[in-house]
Amino acid sequence: MSNAELWDLDTSGGIMEQIQQLVAPPISSEGQRRSRRRREREVYRRPGRAVNHDCCDSCKEGGDLLCCDRCPAAFHLLCHDPPLSEESLPTGEWLCHKCTTIPQEV
Image 1 (cartoon, rainbow, N blue to C red):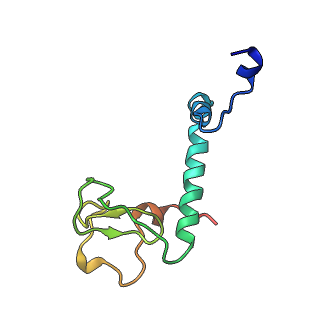
Image 2: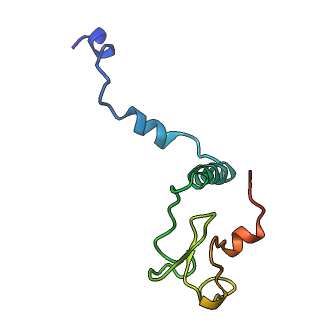
Image 3: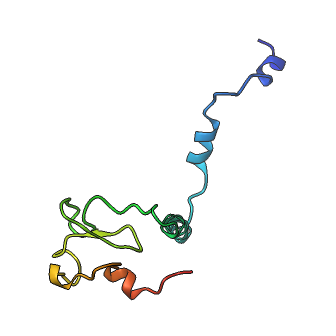
């Protein structure tokens, strides 16, 4: 094979894209957090599109979970900080402790 043929190889179907992703400089942790928050806001702004976690954010177990209406968090009543009782739950929108203490981003 001549040098001209080597430089004229078909590169379709190669793995160059994966290689570039592996050797790319790391994204800063602040950039990752910002990107993640942006993706979460995009999902939760659209009604009917929210997907909450399948396990408790505190103990990581499944079961009967109370889901936050603003973020993907889900908790057992006793795992939430502060713990909740069924009698204290509102009828309608419920926000986890994090969402009630942090102002909503626009």
